[in-house]
Amino acid sequence: MKFSKSSALRGEITVPGDKSISHRSVMFGSISRGTTEITGFLQGADCLSTIACFQKMGIEIENRGDTVLVHGKGLHGLCAPSGILDCGNSGTTTRLISGILAGQNFSSTLTGDASIQKRPMRRIMEPLSMMGAKITSLHQNDCAPLAIEGTALHGIHYQSKVASAQVKSSILLAGLYADGKTSVTEPYLSRNHSELMLRHFGAEVTSEGNTASILPATELYGQKIHVPGDISSATYFIAAALMVPGSEILIKNVGINPTRDGILRVCKAMGADITLLNETAASGEPTADILVRHSPIHGTVIEGAIIPTLIDEIPMIAAMACFAEGETIIRDAQELKVKESNRLDVMVRALTSMGADVTGTDDGMIIRGGRTLHGAMIDSHLDHRIAMTFAVTGLAAEGETTIKDADCVNISYPAFYQDLEKLQQ
Ligand code: S3P
Image (cartoon, rainbow, N blue to C red; front, side, top):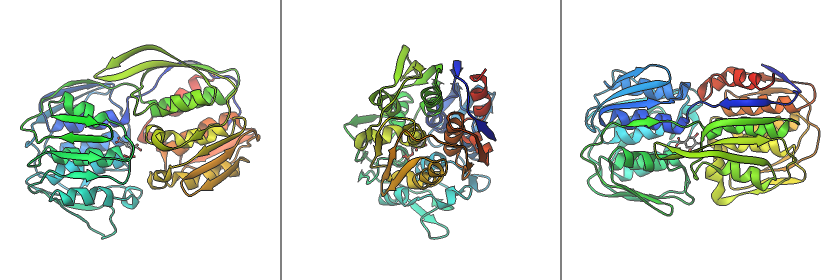
């Protein structure tokens, strides 16, 4: 895919459904009794991997496009999978399903693509093993493929070293099947969709500060879920409007849960002209339309508790910071090294190749804005967020930007390039 300097981007857009909430709707619906009706479901490859895994465990799931019906069979209604469970590129599928599988009365094996087979699974293997789970890394490298022998689980209190919703959710899901209360404390609060949604499905979940707790459940019940637009996907249009002069974009119906809205807080701190309209809620998640107008932005410091609330947005923020006046410092973002690609490394190299003034650090980067970027050949490393970041950056750089393996946007936003093009007319 090729991109070159764009005229102003203008118009209205609706981004696809939230990826985290789409995954959870299918997972929680599958282990609930009765039908869960999901509207606004994200038809991205990651969420389709989750559907396929539960279908392999005997759950009937009707995917009708925007609406998905999950005919759940209750907490103990899954059956031994008909083969290896393929989680594709999805860390959320791998880590959350592991928590569910740990407490079943059957054995299973999980794997995924080359990227998934390199991502750290020790972070879930350790707490699940403390609960009594029998989980092994088949290549003994703490990565997938994972073999899980379902067994009786015990409630624990786990102090997590990382602020990770995938780790927290995996433990809470195992906690549904444990013999007592399970709680997880994390260094900073990560996205809380599991806590909110599990409560909605009937589980006894409490949250206090950075600790979430769950009691073993006897049954969960199917729900109607309306999935809001994904703020992580909306980020590319927010950044595009701020990077391309004259732009004005209205992004409709975006989830603005406070554990996900770091991008809005950072844009405001950078001086961006952003307004929230029509604030309301969908299935217990706050939503709003986001109006963003091109405006001059300046550097900022991004660190500490805000990091988990914008973890997937950091690549786009880093590129945006190249167009800001002054210095932007990103700290405490070492988790980016273990995402779909090493996003710290990839961003520093790719931005540098476009002429940006960026220095990588152990846990982030320092970006000095104000240099004119020029087009370059960018390898997406099959990472959807890298591809989308540089499609947008290509619209604000001089000359032509080419993205290698641009198709990987299918993971979270199949129509991304078409939607971006629509705003250029
Ligand atoms: C997710 C949690 C985050 C995020 C990922 C989705 C989730 O990962 O980066 O895209 O749905 O729970 P970590 O929990 O590893 O930080």
